[in-house]
Length: 297
Picture 1 (cartoon, rainbow, N blue to C red):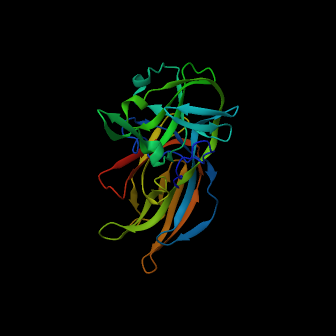
Picture 2 (picture 1 turned 135 degrees about the vertical axis):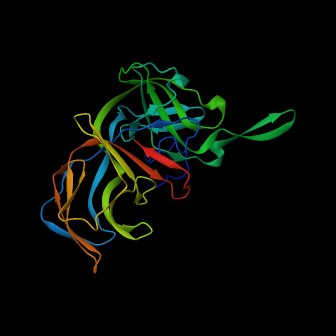
Picture 3 (picture 1 turned 30 degrees about the horizontal axis):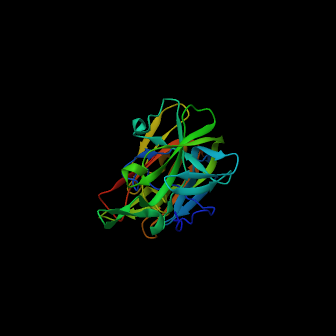
């Protein structure tokens, strides 16, 4: 996913969804709810070579909000014009006690954006000596709190504050907003891909996603259906050395392998069923930090 440029105070920002929940804002962890789009898989026999995606489905945020009337949000020295063009994504905080949130309280956050050094740092003079204080991380997001689910935001905080005295939630009056269900697509997809993997270069079907910074990589998938049941899928599932036809189920989608041609390293397959819209959880390993496992849920 693309990053935004520096925050120029007083200008309208183009915001992007926050990356892995809490991964880049270590002091406060929260999650969003992702929904997998529904869709018809089509009919007929097909052929895939390594690297081909057998099917792909998009993601949506389950609940979003839009501010009804334009205003300027001011929190801890940062200000941002907001209005109905700004997408706010519902967030579920791990530390609700930090902001004394009631059970009814709702929290929505903007996408992340980069701050300029002038906005990140401040100078403080003590005993005739001046030192530089970091107020915020390099990327931050505005988060707004509706304390009683009344349809008005009452407080706001900056997710990404470094200084303790910039982490609190401040009163912002009453800013009216409207809720939207499944209205906002995410700039990411989930796919089932035909690959040759492992030390033996084994033909497999692999769950892949580009949810982390837009790069396609292996992912672990769990989803919840409308009946409340959940399913986990192995990242990779071998398709060679089977008795064909051989079927693999991904939610309500069925991939039937009709045959594997070793000479051309291709599979013949058929898709049946439809993708049912469902809540989804995706786990990926950050390729830049193999010890960091990230959950999108």
